[in-house]
Image (cartoon, rainbow, N blue to C red; front, top):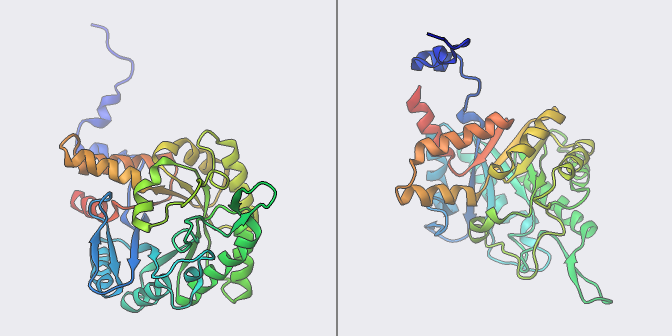
Length: 332
């Protein structure tokens, strides 16, 4: 009988052997759980396109924070739905805005909780874009004005830091946003606050459920003039390199599932922590398939998150965080 030269199956024979030689591991303390906060009283409203994800008013937020802690999650990412929207997104940098209120509340309930503040204007503008709109009188074309938008993004970041945010996470994709926010934070005395930059954010179809959740769909046009073309990876390196030069502390790739190659490329090229955002559309596809009995939710979620880790993600932002953390604890 001819035998194989190598017996790869020897190290797969038992669960203990497989565990011993496992190359990649998921940990709950590497998850960040996104939360949507809103005005009102006694609001816990499920988002139709994101089963299991809710809008919370501040009086219902504490119970969710306690559940997050119980699951073993130590970090949350905040998005806010304001009472008032206008062309300049003034609620984003209001010292008493919904995100600022939520930050202060969470740090009061759970000082050890790491609070990440999404820094953008799209949820707060009446036009749904991530900056100020400029109308070109010659062509009649409206587009987001980069440099004037930076001023408001800096004001937003500083107000979030003043409220107690531990990390500023700018998601706007304006050119120079990291440098502007770093300078603004430093000038305001927040040299110790890191920036988790949405360095590589693609103009993706996977954001649909989030736009419903954050009520941030553009009211005209799209975001392709400032978010990245899904076809490009060299451009991702240029974007990330700019952010590193400007002072970013962490680099994010968004979305994650269709961009594993980009995660791997950034991991190989830069020595900063790499963050993968497992976005709303990725989450909702799994929930829909599991709800129809087509896949097993638990094993599919853990395999997907493991793939992101294997690609090079050090940190994963995911709406699956609470469930995944509990499943990992059960496996120990």
